[in-house]
Image (tube, rainbow, N blue to C red; front, top):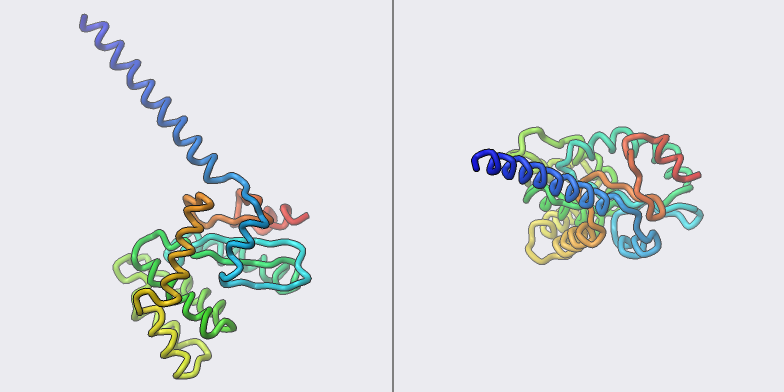
Length: 218
């Protein structure tokens, strides 16, 4: 009897491990699938972007200002991408702030959208500053104080700066609604981790490598 019970326990354990492995496989498979590029581009048209009518390809990046892996992508893949393809107007580039790493991420996303609304020419400078000031201490990461300090480093008039601060700190403002829309898009396209990069709807397996990004554009 004890021997049979032991066999049942072992088989049950094996079955559980098998089911967990299968579940993990399908979850990741769904997360990393290609999407409809035209539909995705239409969904992100209001998002921060580098845009040119002469571009032949569209890149959509899902990220989070609190994510250290996004910072790694920002310093490697994105920088080379901008220098080699965005600045030469060969690709259009959109950013979706997934903001799923806590309240600090949501706050930062609202601030970024507010900058894009009132001072779009300063958006990318603010975007980079947010990654540069990313903190390893989550309690102090991207607080209002840090965000406002980054805002003060932008080329803004006092009136525009006041509007940005008011918008990102006011409930149900435009920036709050845009942040909620980004979160909805993150769920819609089943993005489970960041950075997640799509080129014309095709999922990029290694976003940290400019070569892998460039390869998808050929």
